[in-house]
Length: 459
Image (cartoon, rainbow, N blue to C red; front, side, top):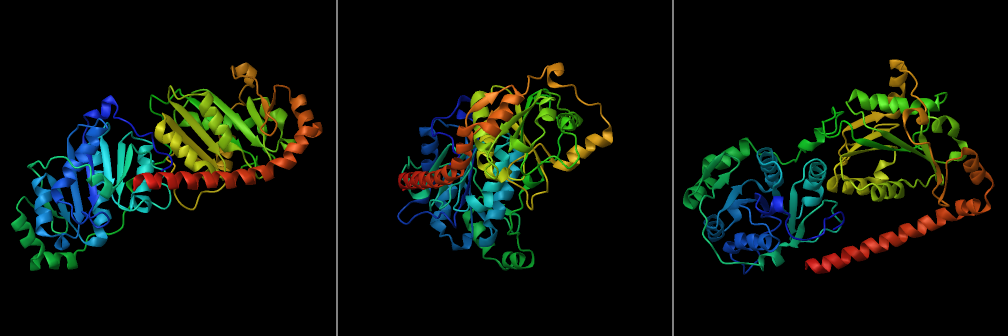
């Protein structure tokens, strides 16, 4: 699966931390010939192989009127709680309990989901969660997903293969049998079966059916939050796509930096700001931008090179400390998969600006978002004093780079000459679009081959 961490042993902080397991019995039933008593020892054995020895809580969800009594007894006797709910409400109940558990158990802690519906039901919420909180995550499913999951996981298993790792059957006390429809629970299998077959229970499920739609609590995340102490003075790296978010007509390019810095300071961010504007710099006000320390990166029109820019920046700036990234573009979705990897695995925050609001909330978790023209207009309304030029403010002198030719200079005249008269540069501008299309095809083949290899390993 892409965007997953390298599989390995537990780190010290997670080795003895709590592990909560939510198991969808509809998607991943106990295979024929397997004993229900194998489930807990199989899971605990798999965890211990990877260095996790913390207490494990397991809850199995499903339409329990369809589950044989000997399976329910086997689960209950090994400390696995069983939740009854209508088949169509299984994912809603799993998610509700997951959110409640997260509220009571902050990291370090480990979560495991056993379901074929992680992608499409739980992944959006978990992606946003992982960008803010460092929970460990395990997954298991009976069918390998056809499309890769972006979640950062510590391990993934095929359900049937996982159960082969069984250890000794050990009785564990304390598990309960729940009826989510009626808020009923018991430790007696006899009472539980009597309840779910009772007239009162059937009536309750008909009159007050449980919800069946998962509404992600993390969808409310991503407002313009005030800076926390850790990030208040952190470095801010800005990548500005001038193709999709150009300067408004008549706007003074020298005011871009002070506009951004004023917006940051309103939220409590006062760290040093580095801005790189990429696009076709044959037609941009280079002198005005560079006078305030805005760096220029020339790219072929309609083929933004933001992914490679972000990747190089990450390579050159390992995340030893808190850092903030900002993307100004209408095409952030083009690199959203790469950005979510960085946010999951590093101590970064993300700001966004765009010329129009997206039609739906992204799985990228942001700490601030703005409309591009509104952000610049707010500066005009505040009537702030124009920011000092880069050399006066301590900002390094602006640089000019060409991503096509790996050409760089601090001279605006040399940069303009390179763009307008260099013959090799002209050849690159003609060649690169065709090469980029070929690379896209090759990357797709590589991803398919990688997915197939992992799929075979999971079988």
